[in-house]
Length: 214
Ligand SMILES: C[S@@+](CC[C@H](N)C(=O)[O-])C[C@H]1O[C@@H](n2cnc3c(N)ncnc32)[C@H](O)[C@@H]1O
Image (tube, rainbow, N blue to C red; front, side, top):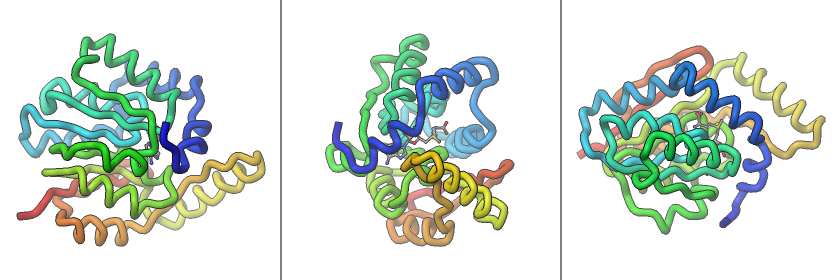
């Protein structure tokens, strides 16, 4: 597996967490912020689209969009625990032939992957220090839209994430969470040829949909 800060991310998500998430997903469906991404993508009215889900976790986005919007998906994730659960659920749904799974830091493998219609990053930029490289690579791979969720840029989230990182340091765990500047993420995606066409919030999360202009 190619590795940039993949090892850190891989260790951050345990098998127990991944199992708990898939259990919750099977019982209650996608999480609230994931639903915002799904609604935004569905609002585009695409059919037979290709999807790249970066940091897809247990794979909720492709499990859902393969029902109506996408005909195939690529799921790139740095976490082997999440990928294992995502693969099992994909097989359970009879979709194994339609999803390619790649265990890697996306920025390391991006140059080997083709462009797709839709790129999604649900709660991913906040796990990755270099949001510029990640979003630039994500934008390069999208023909039509990029949808992402990230923590709302508020004073209480700033404090909340600092507290989490304090305890991570205390436990000598190198994994950190990040509150990246929303305005900078937006300027970067604009420079890459995208315009923000929708933004919604739920609890501590913000979802933004960007569409390729022109
Ligand atoms: C908080 S989890 C979110 C999982 C899923 N998208 C969701 O919302 O349930 C963050 C995920 O992003 C992955 N990740 C973070 N940075 C990544 C990168 N640069 N390349 C690939 N995966 C990454 C992690 O391994 C993890 O699975």
